[in-house]
Image 1 (cartoon, helix red, strand yellow):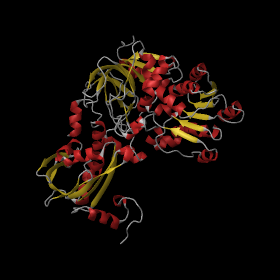
Image 2 (cartoon, chains in turn yellow, green):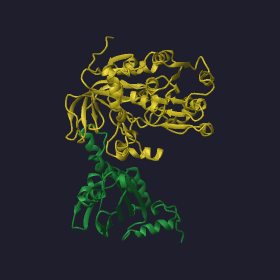
Image 3 (cartoon, each protein chain N blue to C red):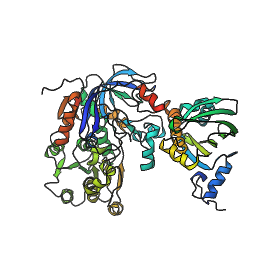
Image 4 (cartoon, rainbow over the protein chains, first blue to last red):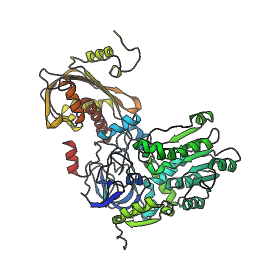
Length: 396
Length: 191
């Protein structure tokens, strides 16, 4: 089959590789019809994530048609499914509590050592995101092997286009969980740092959960315009002072809940700062932690902090004093995609959530390397690239 | 003699005497390196015990065990992978057994890697069963052998941790997680 493979910094290629096979009884093989390039894929592209190996297949946002099933899969050939980016078994203690992203068994045993050393307990496996999170082949390919296919993939009803449901795989549930973690009460003002896909879905979700006002913070004008379309007020931090603006806009109180969706591009485990300590302390780390510091600083007394943004390592100058003295609550974590998929599919069916607005580019799989470069170079206009393996290569 | 005054398991103790007494507590101990590993498995105690007690099942999740020949109700012959494509072998005898609770073993004279230990199964309420492995062993060819084994990822402490994770995966999910996407890759992983 053809697949987008990683070969090094700024070097991704479409190669011919072995077709996937059923290995375990609960497996299914999916023929990919749509797969997105995620902001976090850019961190692989930029070479910041360790334990990548030449030839690794990328991609963790994907959907397609079931073409083969193991004896214990509950899927049927021909069904259209969206696949969660988190690989969860459905039968361990954490899955029983719907904490799918904390699944004990999704990550192969040998790969769990590093997580255990770094975090105290190993985390689950992810598709297409280095060998730290399992080394699973991703979905930017013609086919993919999906483990635990009886609990992960959700079957898509006929009549829905791929573009309407593809983001159930990651960014829509991630934005929804971010808003849920903010414990929004009716009448609340919620501030969202970062208007990437997760931030934008968090804006939509916050309104659906009863927020009275949502204030979106970014510096890309096009992304702020999208937030505005969903009813958010905006702060462009290149034009205005964020903390001062938030205090004035909330009558001196501060937002009731704050959501840090800035580091969200890196929702694999290991963001830049842990990978390269020097780079982290010099520029990347400071940028990334700036948003969470500012969010804590602005949040009202007794307010809630939600952090879908991913942090992999250690943080300096964390405002622990403000956090304690103001009595804040912090909720965070990788997304338990499987938990949210059914309800969010319904919300899409009922027209309560729109996802298609996000897609700025569609291209064939063979054009993926071009897509990576384009996304990397222009994050204002390129909001989301969806690869369609069935689509012909664009005319040169 | 300095013994710990806290409630932590002796396998985690910083005190040499405490660890020595834990080794002595293994029936007919062999060796003076000690490993303790606990894992909680979301399955009933009796089911886990029964699977483990049938030693012919063990190679299904112990990646470094090439094969186990059952010699009698209480004795078995183990062939285990060692660094650089070699194998080590020993006969093991069950020294103590309580149905559903405990299996203890020790290696016979002449073992390539003298070892002994116990696997214990305890109810953990709604969380299933806590399985604890306590293993005393003599690392092959002393300290140097241990370093080499670690390089090749066949160090007993690393293997014990991974084996217990695979046992958990197999019991909870019916399969062992792998990122291999072709049968050939899977076979190479197991080699």
